[in-house]
Length: 284
Image 1 (tube, helix red, strand yellow):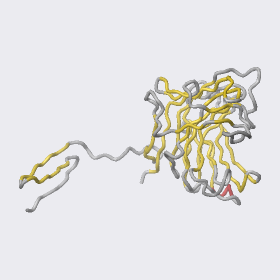
Image 2 (image 1 turned 60 degrees about the vertical axis):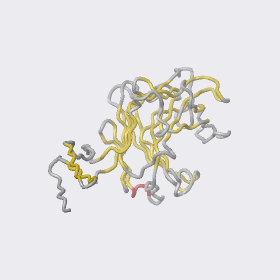
Image 3 (image 1 turned 30 degrees about the horizontal axis):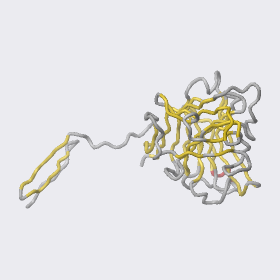
Image 4 (image 1 turned 30 degrees about the vertical axis):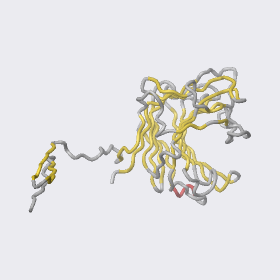
């Protein structure tokens, strides 16, 4: 039996043969491709935080402290203990809230939260962005950043780090974008750029923090305006480690080597509020 099958415009025909009878179904639903944004990217992953609980298929929790020693230590001399408690991280009215608090917990004097996509989702190249309202006070250090999934070139910083956004709470009008690289902890380097608001602070309203990561270049934008670029040639003679899958992190640290510790002017609790996180790939 010869069966004629064709597709015209948005009409789709499906043929099924049952006992010699042909059933034809049609749909007027157009076959559409994902929309391409003005920068030539297609959305491939997102969290709009519209649920009542953090999506554990997208985010994991990190526990512990940023002091140099202890079971859950990783350095930077930070003072918080990261938890998954509802006091430190929760969803509210369509927003993710990470809250740093002054309280004694697990031997530390402060608590906060850090979430990450490690082991769940990681990406090589693309556009990564989040709409965030940041905290401000002495000793607070919020961040939206990326680390390598497998450390293909060795331990930090040899395999790289991409800081999409960092802010020092005592300079709340300035946000930073940075890459870290090098051969070892004792032979490390970084390239950073900064964006300072003409008025107000990043705690006054939501701002869009973006990185566009390509094979030989990484670009930083705030509210769509580019303010920093790092190219492969700038990292030489060090290795360019930004050619492997990286995962996303969101956290609020307290104290540490860069922001310094809280003082008598510091106010708690402090909250980083995230409207959404989105990941895009370049349209083919």
